[in-house]
Amino acid sequence: MPVIFKLDKEQTDGASGTSDEEMARLVKQVSIESPSHKLKDCIFSFETPMPDTPPAGARVKVRNAGVCYRLRSASSSSSIKSVEALHCGSPLHSCVRDTALFPGYEVAGTVDALGEEVGETDLQLGDRVIVYPYEGHPPGYAEYIAVPEVQYLIKIPDDMSLSVAAMLPSGALWAMNTVFSAHIHVEKVLAEKGETGHCKILLVGTGGLALWAMRIARFYWPEKRERININVACLRDEGISIAQEYLKVNVVQWNEDLYEEQLVERTKDACGGPVDIVIDFSATSRSIRRALKCLAPGGVMLMSSEHAQGLITRFGPVAEKENHQLVPIEFGTLNQLRNLVHLVSTGEIEPPPHTIFSADQANEALAKIGRGLIPGRAILEFPEDDEESEE
Image (tube, rainbow, N blue to C red; front, top):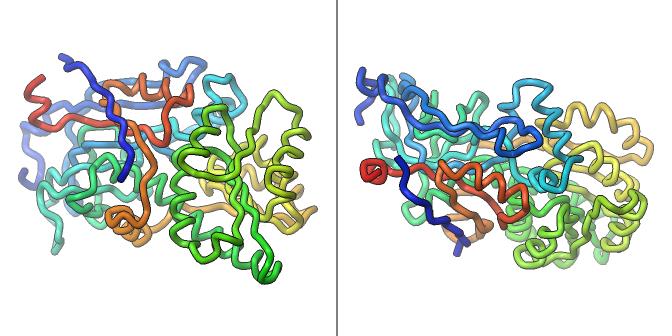
């Protein structure tokens, strides 16, 4: 069963197309922007007009949105630099790298309206859906979002909670595609080392992505589990307990108070020598430099495609000297997401724990993420219509 932590909160003050009354209606939106030195300065709550229903698409009433991983909404280089600064910043901010800082790309809710030009579809008003994180995905920390084409909507089973469903479109999907991409390299390593050889993998971080990756890997690699040694590098003290409780793997703590060479040697000792594959979901200049020193000759490092270009340009020549590969990973396909929904709904893959915050508790959610107090994922929740009417 999925582990869910839901926080109590105090109460505070469809047809297709869009009517004049709907257009005049204002809906809530929460924006989590590039952070300053104070996390509270990056959260803004405001009202915005009800979005129109796209002719060939749909309007979705958002129930849950994951505090998610994608950086695509960061439109300026200054935003990206802010994230990089966080990675090397204060202890308060050092934990945030395992989650995300920008508007939601992990959305679960119900179909509120269908466009006039929508053709044959199995979607109906009120259907429970998640939204595939397509290019141009609107911010998900809002009560309603417009989706341009219904192909980006995936129905979810009645027995799956919307809070669990909200974890799938970006983080879980990315983790799944990373496991699939790593599988090619795992097979190559095992073939080269023979029947008694082992493939050593270093997973950097203990956030939601790492938790998903471990669960997905164990499902897809059961027959090779004995020959695959997965070790986790924790980026904070709290990560040790998370790794031991939820991942049950070997753990090495990347304590930034130590000298770099000490951390590298500590990592190699914990892994039983240099590793064959490194998976770093939130790669930074510091983590890549360290990981390359931990890789065996011919080793592979997997990272997000969204911020890989600059890092590969910078570290490509260093990697080539030891015949290392830096491999960018895309976020996954619609079919992978449909398969993921099926595997989670049937219990074949267990979702990580998550904590639900009301949308007006976004400040508290981000503060707890920053202090490493969220085991797994943080999920924002907007009220249902009947809940709104009671306020």
